Length: 420
Ligand code: NIG
Ligand code: FE
Image 1 (cartoon, rainbow, N blue to C red):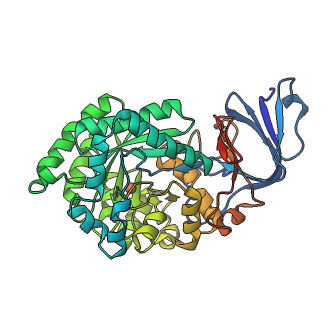
Image 2: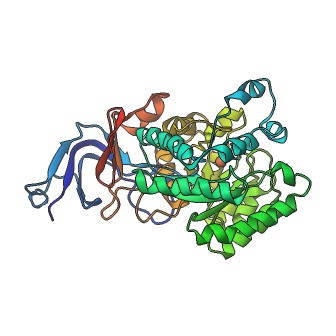
Image 3: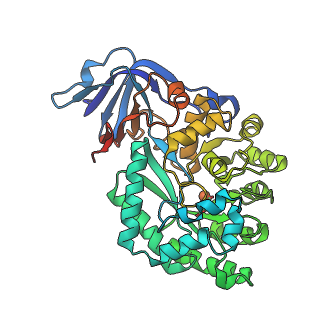
């Protein structure tokens, strides 16, 4: 078979190949790295990976051959937890935060998520699209080729749908693949403060409508003290499961409520945040092989403890990392900084970090068959990093190491600019 494109002279090719199921324990640190490799692509897919000289039968008249000049190549990075589509920004709350007012207190004063709800309601589809597209371009530049995006800044059907329609349109128009999550249960609207159970009923009514419109694959709930309680979250999640949604939970982000236990009990695909997860909850997640989606940028930005990731890995919980990109608890699209916090804050090795943003992240959005590793038959989503090895990308922090990004075999970002 003749290749459309061959990338040769790859200094270190991090394939993430092998294994079945998300990587756990020591497997997270056992990463295949090929030296002096090449990668051959046809029709958006990988057709050959080799180290022993490019086979003649791969090269046809139209085959384009590019020299990777000894640099490092990894699978396209995957961010399985973002709040991509939203109106406005919240720098006006920054000084309050610096003066010690807590995240939940700001929310309870009608700010925080509720302030972004106001801006998102006001924004038109076009405005939301333009703002989210700008973020997607930034993300592409950091080497991300697939992300998850949540709704949650409407808290009523019309605005929630508007957010998810923006995500759907961008999934079609932009090179980034976007997996969509309905997070109607992100905060209690002011008008339901006295009767949150009534709002839970409203969310449950929205579930079939969102599903019928084909707007979301996952359902998520912000389960937290002062937001949705364990029984309320459970009610919403079980109703969603019944309709065919896969489940995600913002669990044990601030207070240890038993969120990790709930993740295991309802059989979610991932439990997210888990900074305050209990030992029992961690063990229950390990038993079920549920992904812990860890968001160290949120710990960093809120000045909170980092999630107990070493314990999770030791207990056999598969770990993924995400930005949590949102206007409040983590206003950054920079996954490379998050990966650096993975090592500096969570004490993960660079290999564990790369596992967490590739193959394990793919599992956490149910896309492991097509992305997350560079293997024959999988999508040709990859990044050329201007670095001699992956340790360098983590160690040399705070800058962007991306040189080129390929999505489905096509160059979409090169030397500081998007080019799709
Ligand atoms: O993952 N905690 C709930 N949701 C987001 C923050 C959203 C916001 O503050 O706008 C999070 O931290
Ligand atoms: Fe979040």
